[in-house]
Image 1 (cartoon, rainbow, N blue to C red):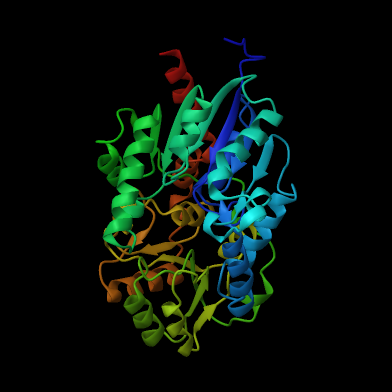
Image 2: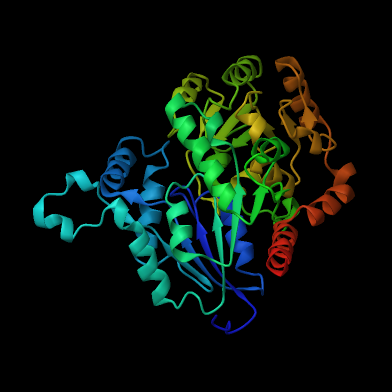
Length: 411
């Protein structure tokens, strides 16, 4: 066995999508704070492989629905990663572009990469950087259908699986859900450590994972509402209270009837939405209301600047299987901005109900917003808020995760 060059880790991170660096998702925060951890030497980050045809579709979609789709941002970010422009410090970022094998003809198959070539691509990239000089940590976010063969080939010192939601609860076919269930079982069975971001996921995944731990999302502490940035021009044009929501605008989780009720009964309030409609565009039916404003997609740092100028932040989620297996990251962002929050009674909301107003009916939701607009509901809880943020910050989460990583290697 080769003696490691030092006591640090080389971390290879496998993300399940192609939106790294855009939304400030859990995996973005983990990579950001893992890169600051002295125990990590280097991070090699791989977005999900993407077909060239899919990249072309992104270009077409970005032209067709530029204001409401994430396509252009994902296309730009993929190009930045391919050109090395997303690298920095400890981080190296990669995205594998490929074609479908059946589309290749004759000699073309020698020059154009296919999905089957992905493990070879990984090996070239990782060996070029001397992977194996240190202890190697693989960090995977199911569902990743490539990962079992990757783990077999590279045999890292430790595998961590981080479960962010249960993809089986999203609208899909029974066949797709069965594929996802099998993939969860295989990846978690291969993992030395498993993290889940909410208790429902923890309980659902226990049959697949013997060493599973609850790690909810967390907040960044550097933003302070008293020192917020200049108000964005788009918000300056809006007269009256701003009732805001930030996140993917997908009606699989958002209560459209509740939003319609607010827009109808409170025309003096402005409902402001930041986010993509790439999953479906039905929520855009609210555009018929003069007090509803869709401001499109904003990159994470820019989105936080908008959020900091909300008068009230809302979480108008449905209570269904999908939302019962989530730990809404946007709540942590709202809290980091010391915003008053009104939410529907969804799973995991109990950990926030000392600060957020939980409304169990449309009338109560309006009443909660009105109270937040009329009273200072934040300042009396400021001391407890600072204490909560100190305990539930990303630095603390990553430190606790890495402590478990070290313990697992010593067992």
